[in-house]
Image (cartoon, rainbow, N blue to C red; front, side):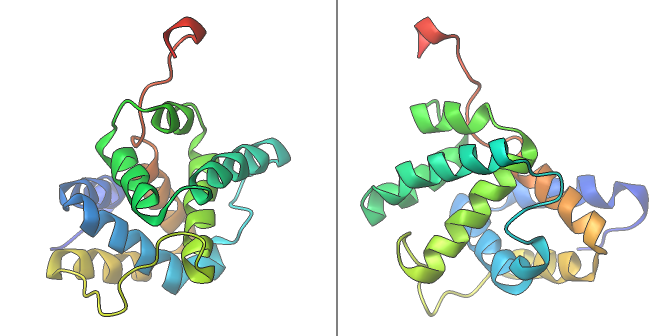
Length: 161
């Protein structure tokens, strides 16, 4: 898998979306494990409001069983029309990044379902991870935003919720 030129970020996002759902979740885990400190808990452009919105959604997920937590994450990637999916869908890309960051922290401290200790990425996901590592910080953030932006469901008007 090679990426070059101005289309790198678009190619990265497409390659990510082509992975199986659980592989996308695993890649997120490895990205945040290896580069989470550079992403920082306050992603570029985050405001107090976006932080509190991300934390509120995280708290909803944290209160679920591990199986439900995993299903929520899968539903977000699959764009399932659920209440959490619609809440997520209404957030900005920066707030979505913060939400995934909080999930990764929760996985680290055991409040969110952890990755199996012996999990190995597929060769396609490993290629993506290696390419992401080689990007400069701005390209990494743009790539991550492109990953998280389309996830979730479309928000609905109050009466449709």
